[in-house]
Length: 300
Length: 300
Image 1 (cartoon, chains in turn yellow, blue):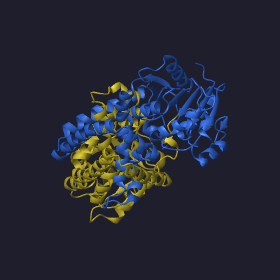
Image 2 (cartoon, helix red, strand yellow; image 1 turned 135 degrees about the vertical axis):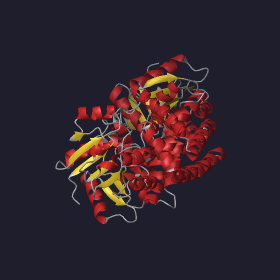
Image 3 (spheres, chains in turn red, cyan; image 1 turned 180 degrees about the horizontal axis):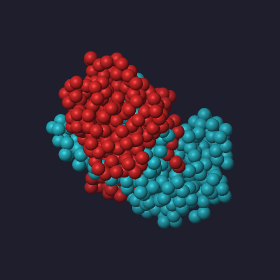
Image 4 (cartoon, helix red, strand yellow; image 1 turned 30 degrees about the vertical axis):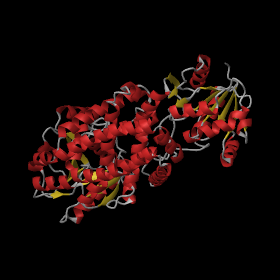
């Protein structure tokens, strides 16, 4: 299944990064782009993203061998319905959504006669929109492919090869396990960051101006994630509700235990916990999933 | 009150950064260093930190105009007692502790006949030890000075000028307010980060290897803070217990509210919350307290 033409539906951070990465890494592949927003299409044209930007979603996917839906997970069903009339027989439809079981169901329902291979590149920044993308976003990051039970092996291989060509490492797993893993490594961290940034900005005893001034004490780290796209993240939490609530319960248990250790003055328990967590970061750096430079390599 | 000689007691990340910064920015000032650990003194000597490294703490502060205690807050009282016999009359004793009311009490008690001006440079990285320090650590960061009620204005000015010479901006506030502000901007973020990294590494459903592989989804941001020095942070939570528990309660209320919004499928509440938090990061960047580059400027 050779991929000669790709259609990217949704030209935000991820969609525009795919378009740029294909242009750089797979110059022989044609890329057509579409976004539901007139403004975004205008910016994408001005930036020279994709070979063609098409106003009509069904027209955008004409002749595409691979269609990637890069829209918030709550909009996947609508986006799939909008492209359906234009899909050629044998086209592979994939996506980049951060939750997979719900998206897989929505796409299967909207496109019953097509090949659907859901995927999730675990990469991003806090910025949004077509100007935020860049070609190297997926380098050394993992892309998780979650084919359904009856998926064609050839189609899975085609999607896998495509992401590898963009610089990603690929894992294949089932959608439910993906959703549990990402609840831990992505969704819960975002929920916690959104919470603490909101909490800090609404205290009576400490002004917002003080929070901003002294944010280098640790708080500023959380504000990056809490600056992520609100609509995208609203949809993720609604789509992956069960796994998020399950991991949140575990977090709450641990937080209560540490709260109790602080209240009781149990320094040994705190020190033991803080020593264990230090080792995790070393492994992340060793495996190339974060920068070894102190402070994320921030300039000092 | 001219400062011609500084003694730095404790040569970890902060103490060694002070020594380096003085050498670079105040070359006319002599610096004597001491650390309770033989190993740390050995490394400090090998690195050429300070003009002299002295084995005995009381001898290290001889003739010093300014003594800075850069030890975990739980060790401040002992460190003060150890230097007391060597202090010259009129020496200013300061520190760098992340909590201030308890430290101020401990120092006043240990050094009743001396000038104590507590301070807290809000700066650091996740690394520890004498090799982790660097001269520019305090550039454009805030240093909060918390003089007691009867403190000499001249001594406050001397400490303020010292930190400004190292590149910091200085604010003066009372110790109790400092402790509430830092509970929000530093201590609670550290507690939350330590908690979530511990939670993620002990789930049954998701392996530690999976957590590490897919950490770029957000989790890795928390691991930096959760790699901070365990003993230093144990002491901070024990010393600033009341303010930490008070802000933690506010965080828990907000987390429960967002948890409920997810359970009920209240997308409007989530989107509204996530939109508000985005603005805080913009202010932090505008005020020079974080890097404007996406993803903290990590390489992609």
